[in-house]
Image 1 (tube, helix red, strand yellow):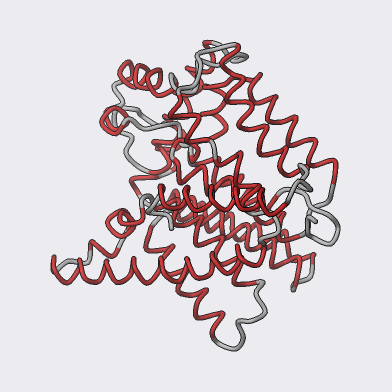
Image 2 (spheres, helix red, strand yellow):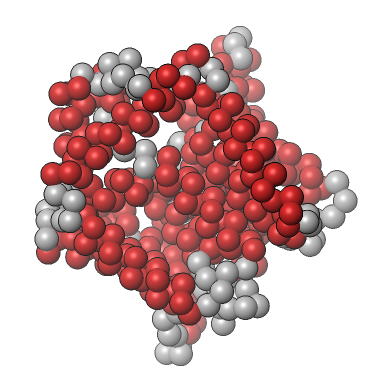
Length: 355
């Protein structure tokens, strides 16, 4: 569950050990394994050209090593676990929020961070429920009204959690999957265009996140979802510019960002010690282009070995869009969710399975 990093990590690590034990010496690496392991290798190898990552950072990234082992041949169990977890997560969050609202005699606990705080972080909740919804949508055992009711529950909880960037990523990924299965391909450009208009309206129309705040984001006043990300991306580029090839070290990025925030008098960023909220820029600042190149080699090796199915494409699109607006590898649960989503969105055999 998203609110229990230690429990999730221990369960999946144990599953990886069981997977290795059950293989009885017949286990071999798959291209999808290499794609994930190369991410950990990039972080570890960055010690050769920049500041070495701490043991804590290496442990936080360790799911990239053992999640491929834990999920091997476990597609059905993964689907069932996500569906059950999504239902439980939704009911717990809704019940907790209603109880808190009654006690406070206020609607506030039903929305945004007050609603999602029990489950760790609202963008993680959104991605988790998106994965749960993807599992549910392809599970033939849910018939009649059960499937739309559960999908509606997941959507309601994701909306109340309030991660607009996450919702946009999940919606676009879902559209890509849906149009490839049940709608004429010629409708895809219109669907994507409509989704883009809706996203722009949600993100930019409110006064505190207006287009002016996006194009002329002022660090002193930035507090909204959009203008803060603009400021943080500019701060990240300032850090990257100091050494784009080698980076400054994964553990040094936040300190460098705080220095830039102090120079710019970015009060909101200093108070919350905000990361970049863009995983690609965060990695570039930390491990440089050399590190990104190591991971890219692993991903390219995997991509050349197989083909994507439509569902995997949708997951990949969702994850890329999420990582453009969130630095998810900076927390343990983020690494678990990213590694899991990567495992199921990377190229597979034509029949959609690894054997």
